[in-house]
Image (cartoon, rainbow, N blue to C red; front, side, top):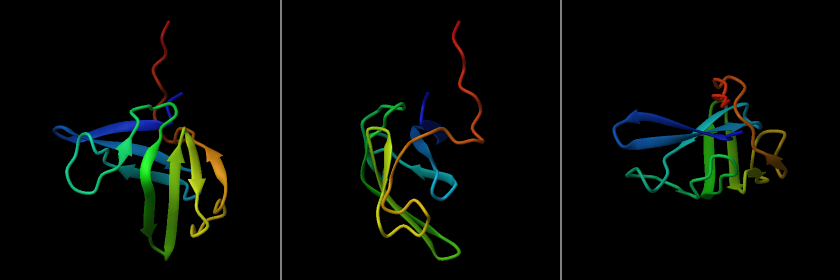
Length: 104
C-alpha cells in the first residue's frame, strides 16, 4: 500500500504528498529529481519512502511539524508541536485519498 501519493500539477514537476498523522493533514514536497527550488532527495519508493533532509512544516496557529522520513517511518523530532513529537510512526495513506486501484 503506497504511503506516498504523486501529484502532478505543472508539467514535469511532481509533488510528493505525505499524510502526516501528527498534523492530521497532508505535507507536500518536491523531489530533487524533478523540480527547481527547495527540493528533497527521495529514494523513489512509494511504499517505504526515505526523504532527506528533514521536513519542516509550520502554519497557523503557531504550529510546527519537524520530521525525517526513513524507510516508510515518520521520525517526529522533539520540536514538533503535536502529540507525536519524539515518536516513530509508520506511514499510512491519507484517509481522504482515493482508494488504490486493485489488480485482478
